Image (cartoon, rainbow, N blue to C red; front, side):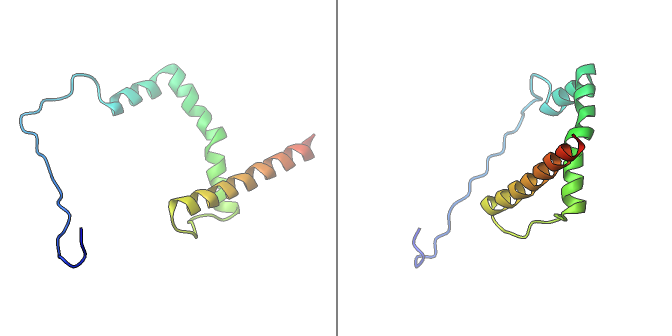
Length: 98
């Protein structure tokens, strides 16, 4: 594409008519069945003691309620740094308790 010709890239859109439902259950239905199983309920229940406190701590105590950098690489770096700080604090508290 040349800037001086004024041409724009072409976008193609396809419409499929007469398509029926998929043969098997949807991804959402399969995931819901996994979560609703006894093992799934137990695993999901553990989320409240393993994952959610990390987000709460980072958001409320650091405070990271939005990223200050732009771009996936920089945001991933900022998030990793906050996670490291959280992990170091957890190790320090575990050492104090021992």
